[in-house]
Length: 176
Image (spheres, rainbow, N blue to C red):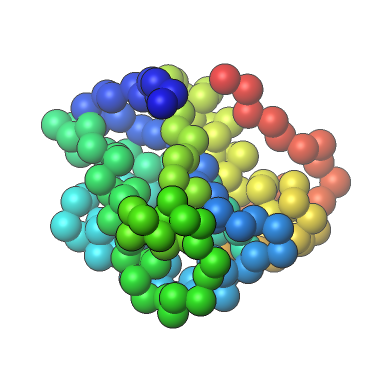
């Protein structure tokens, strides 16, 4: 079994990418966006965290979240979010023999990508990456046109202008 090395930093701010198992042509996350919102809100209430940035695309999501100062347990939060979302869906997905044996649904990839934010420049780059993602994937021409994102909240707070990344910009790549 691979040895996944995670960075556990109490009170850390992390960037995450979480994918559906079947990504090709799958719009499950936006089709059931309210269910995802309920799952996130429920976990956030029981296991607090701050959402700095979040975008939900049809088949994956990206976010930048901050844990409480004495907490490192993002793994439980993701397990609960995935489980809460999955439990609200009918059991219509195909599952492998291994997933059936383990009692797992066939909705989410088991793993996720996590990156500990190191400084303000890193934070800013990942926040931009989160919000530009719908444009990057060709879902909209302008960031403001995508409804499943914290972008509009951040515009209201004065963090981004409404016309930020209106479609003429070069794509932003985050490099570790």
